[in-house]
Length: 126
Image (cartoon, rainbow, N blue to C red; front, side, top):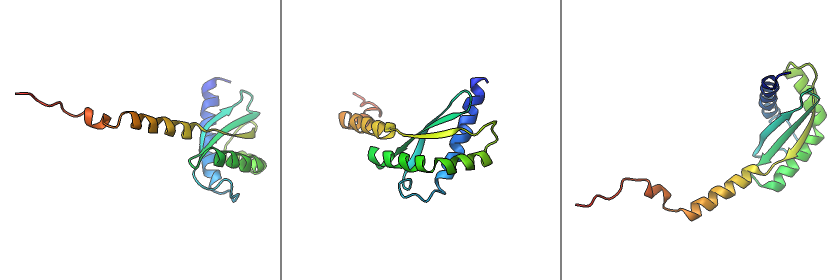
């Protein structure tokens, strides 16, 4: 199967997973949990889902554990929502890329506090 079909199907899975996460009642999944990336295997048998939390890396790990416990329910709901030849098995992994990028952004702002002012118009000398 061409890779663009796999990528399109992975995006459909990502969209439906985002909607499904709001219906879960597990307290580990509550809060600011987002899906960073979805990797679907070529035979559609396995789907790795990378999740992150704005509350930190530890909250992301707890969310991944909660989602792995609900993997059966998620697989059943995905079979109902998305038309696929076979419904993949889901593995949820914690990803700290959001926290990492926020740390880089903070360091850049510390290094260049006048960056917004420097891009303004230069002073004119008469």
